[in-house]
Length: 282
Length: 220
Image (cartoon, one colour):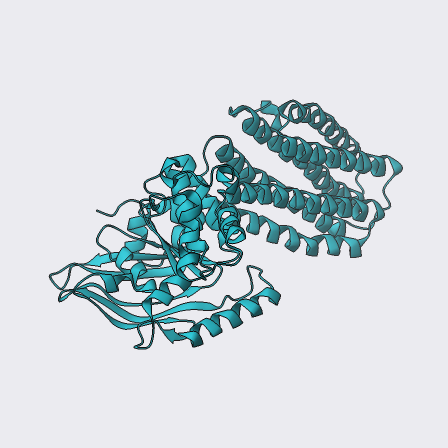
């Protein structure tokens, strides 16, 4: 795994001097090839191939049961935690197979952080929530600065700087979700995966999370799953539409179309995408 | 606060303003080509229209994308819809400039009397002023200022009617008649540019008040 870390470090250094305009082709962070995921024997998701680009927000949309949450979990091996789950095909992260035998899933989850649907702060202080990851990794020096930086990046610092020792559970739902984002950022990931990050939040908190995504993509690569199609339209650079294939008797998620978000919402190539984004589906 | 969305709206505003600046350049070029009977400059005005058209298409594509992704509502929606119209009006104004340039080239070489030169200068200057007022009032969402376009349009209409009378007074000289016919179309172009400026003003009032109404029937 140290090889992977070195590769990432090298990338980050190169990026510091590289121009970052919209027209510059972005590097591929994830290269997914013919991925199939099974729970027990049935495929929940089959034959998915796509590339995720750095410094972009990529959204996965589609109806319930289309496998989009299953898919995002493959990017940091969260499916490993589900008994009976099996992954075929490959997920290359910076050219390295995430499912290779020598790959430590814990390191994967440090480099590729995740934020979930419901804010899940630890029942600890605001400070301790953010400091948790760095402490586990033994990063003791400059911990205060690290916590402040993460909270600033998550656009939460101004609201909590005078109450860092208070319980994280005293925060509002929207603040708790930004705290969870700060907690993920504190261990210096390269990628943030967000599974329905705003679906439990009110519209104002949702707008703050969406603004935050636009900010964070300058430094990170962001992948989100969302039920809210308009959220994908608003925040994502690239959008993948998944659907459910019932032709084999079961219900298998398939990737229907993957393109620039603008293209998905103005001139989708596949009839199924058109039906879904226009609300004619189901 | 949807920061990215607000930025996109501001970019749209800026793109429209840039298009307006190009249209003013096109008008200035057409007017100079007309007064100086400069065929070379007329060709430049004709070629320059591609630049305006590029902006026009880019703005329209930007609006398509914005509507699809950001679902603007209320004042934002009115603004986006108004930009869609104003964009078309500006593109049409540039087309009239091209028509003037083409007519300069088509007209027989007649040294126009001072009277006609002055009339062109007057109509050109009024058209220019109207575009400026239309763009300024749209940029500041100033419905009151936009409505002053009606009076300015009346002035350009009068100038156009006077021009028609002058041409009708021409004798039977076929060269002069052909020249007069071409110049009637030029005069008509200035008059139509004024109408489009009034239409832009109506869109400004729509953005500002939420109500669409025609300032006057005479604008058509």
